[in-house]
Image (cartoon, rainbow, N blue to C red):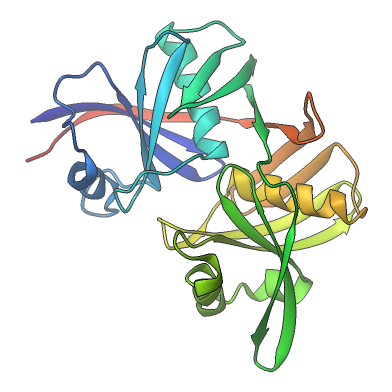
Length: 264
């Protein structure tokens, strides 16, 4: 069957956008998503987002490249806002859902903002050892679970085996966690690398990971709003939200190309 799609990139975090009104999208899309996300053999992406018009401006369904549902994706949400605006489904201040959770967005020229909420009532501390050195991580839920390590050496070296060990550690059963290695350079700037579950690798950027780093750093009193979070793909500007547990995430969103592909 022929599938129409649009390819988006948000700071190198890339997504295949599908119009949910397309009758060719299967009811159970797991196998299709795995196929479409295979780099070098298909379109290739970190995930697929199916956007449907609804009683709100629109509703989005997010899937990781492993075909499984993702609860939330901060960069994906900003792609959704741009996609819905281009489709004419909303104005410049959309209200939309990702699965059953409601979010607000803003289109401001080539900058897209989304307000996200931290779901954790408290930050959990966990210690992990690497080559005889103990590292303290801070775990919270910024829409999806994240653990953040503030350490310059971990950030610079970004040991992938260590990240995978933590991602699958039984303390985070049954769903696992995303893993972030961050370096705070001053009160307004954080550098970060994020190992994302479902992608099972470091990605170029992660909105919810950046948010988790800001939330935990704020609670330690070492940064102040606004904060620029820098990753391999670029920078996210994070501002205080409408309540103590919410934040606005801002960045440029790129629609790379549109096309059709055959799926059998």
